[in-house]
Image (cartoon, rainbow, N blue to C red; front, side, top):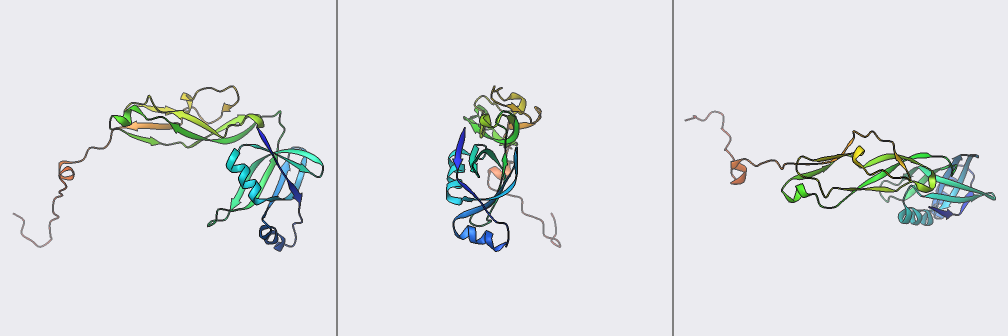
Length: 204
């Protein structure tokens, strides 16, 4: 899947130009990679954020760069600590016929049988590295936990194979597990706790 984004070349000096761009609702960015020399660009902040919100980070973004159609992925981005607004983006141009590696989010689906029986579910891995051509990169991978009983776990190797992509992360990596809930002591159950001894008092 790909989406289109309008971009314009930008000057890099003076540095105050970056603040000027942000005040105009644009994000300073850079694009480089396959058949593209490192080029400073500016993109509309609201439009880019909308595209990412609707399609995710792993979507192919097609831009017109000085009359040349360039297919890109977002390699890195920076955002404001407080507002979360994008402050800088690095795009990497890609060959649509060559596989590339990205991270895909792991999303748990279903209600584990072991949790219904009183167990506790713990997720230990939240994303995996996948390899695929840019148009087939997944944004997320669903992990069905419905059949997990107390004492069961799922690893990367348990994920269903998919013809669109290959999972690069080690198969032994544990994604999720269901364990017994820790039993409370009798004092905890009764809402009581032994009073601490006070130094200097006679102990009987």
